[in-house]
Amino acid sequence: MITSAQMRAARALLGMDQRTLAQHAGVSLPTIQRMEASSGNVRGIVDSLTKVVAALDAAGVELIAEGSISLAGGRGVRLKPGAQE
Image 1 (cartoon, rainbow, N blue to C red):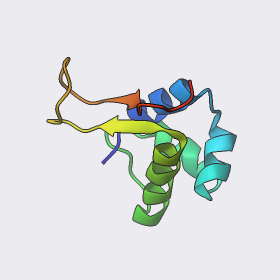
Image 2 (tube, one colour):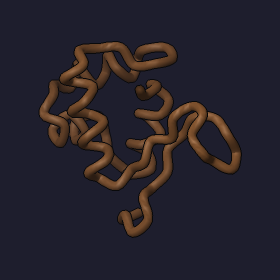
Image 3 (cartoon, rainbow, N blue to C red):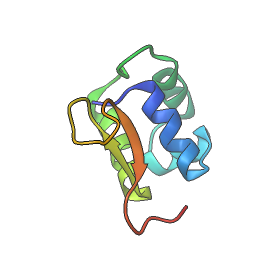
Image 4 (cartoon, rainbow, N blue to C red):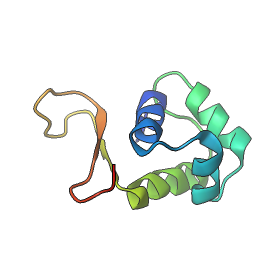
């Protein structure tokens, strides 16, 4: 669904720290820290993971899944058209 690298990259694009992401997602700061400490795909409670992905989406980040159309290929993140930088 999302990798720890994508989570960190998404926060960087938004200029958002872990505490702010936790507040927007309605999860605890330690939950965000554990998710970002995962290797590869983020592990955690599905509900928490869904909240984090939804918060990033609402903030204007598009998650690029493996196999999705992207000029460079591979996973990644990008700002949605019209999102604030």
